[in-house]
Image (cartoon, rainbow, N blue to C red):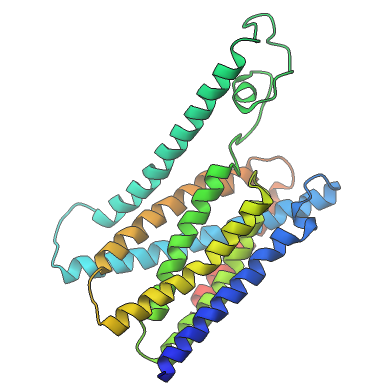
Amino acid sequence: MEYLLQVKIGALIGLLLLTLLFGFIPARVKWFRDTNGSEIHRTVLSLISCFAGGVFLAACLLDIIPDYLSDINTELEARKVEISFPVPEFIMAAGFFMVLILERIVLNCREMRGAQEERAPLIPDNNRHGHSHGTGPDLESSGHHVHVDFQAHSPFRSFMLFLSLSLHSVFEGLAIGLQSTDSKVLEICIAILVHKSIIVFSLSVKLVQSAVRPLWVAAYIGVFAMMSPIGIGIGISVMEAHLAAGALIQAILEGLAAGTFIYITFLEILPHELNSPGKQLLKVLFILLGFSVMASLTFLG
């Protein structure tokens, strides 16, 4: 086996093991899962969540979107596509609206099912002051309850966050698998190792704070850990088979993933923390801290 292939397989194994390690720290440590602790404990959890929000914001603006725009513009130029319509931005918007429409369909079906279940026992006008029904649609429609960001950390949004990050991880692995020199493989691998360790830790924090069951959290982390190795494997296969096709499809998928990530970052992660009361300036500070860490890693290459 040639040395370059050995380096790529080593990078594949290293990415898998390190991602699993950092992903299962919040998933397995009870401290991260306990949301009924003291006020200090809840504050620390909230600040960690804000740090994770800053990480995802930086990943969105400094990593995922620039990578996608670079790839799609390269492919369009290679195919001599000249059009005044902003195609790259339109693809991102398609990813954004895809998640928005899917989420609204899911929530609408849930509300309809809840309305059917509650229609019989409810007396419309006389029990408006009662609080015996604690389901989501009832609470959301009640004028006596104020729940800011009612659907924050819902299982659906957690899944979309996982999906968008997983797609991006495949493309990161693909970048390693397609390299032709061992030095470049090591350089990219080290950068991805540091970057992905922070990302998977932040993802795990978000998952354990959501309504996702522990078994599903473990499944999400396990699958996410395999995404970069899968990308490396695909890249190795393409290099071995000397195939050059598929780059445009990859770029389009990157754009859809970028649009998905924009939706999750700006409509789920950041609003959830900033709309909850208490320690507002400290929360902003930790969002900036998370962003700064990722920005520093990006600046250092």
